[in-house]
Amino acid sequence: MALFGLLRRRKWERAGFQLYTAAVQAARDPYLYERLGAPDTLDGRFDMIGLHVSLLIHRLRSAPRPGPELAQAVFDAMFSDMDFNLREIGVSDMAIGKRMRAMWEAFHGRAQAYAAAVDAGDEAALAAAVARNVWRGTAPDGNAAALARLAADQARHLATQGMEALAKGRVDFLPSQQVAA
Image 1: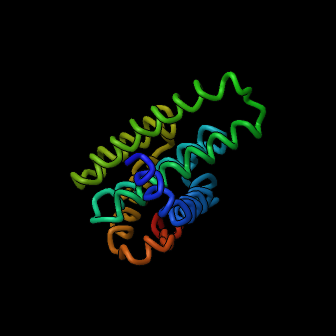
Image 2: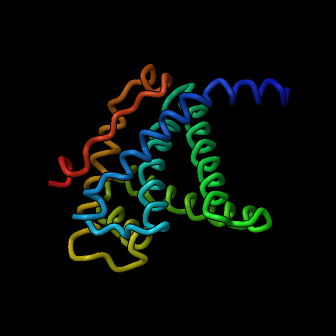
């Protein structure tokens, strides 16, 4: 039975990586850093990737099959990429496990907060969550609210995308500047 589960997970690996890559590209939008003031640091980039990936995973988990399998594939792609990047910047093999666990816990907590706010349609709660996570509490004036609007719009946009395209690894994120303007 374990082999069947592994084969089923591998079926969605390519699509999961493609979806993750699209989320990373959306998270690299210069507007997020230059206009909204997201910290252009390792942690800030992790937070922007985490926000976009969590919105995508939330969309996939709420869908019928293969949504949950794709959500897991996106998560696996993200943390495979994080592991690779930590090794690339010189984190020792001995420290990788601890760092990966801390990143997983951070992502998980953020994803839960974002999903709860999106599900409730509560942009104030979403703004509080992004202020707490992206800016560690205090965002520049209006920036947390602007990022929350952007995230809520992204979530609505993701909800309109069909599972057929998502299962093929195709997802469309709105340009940040277009949404936040």
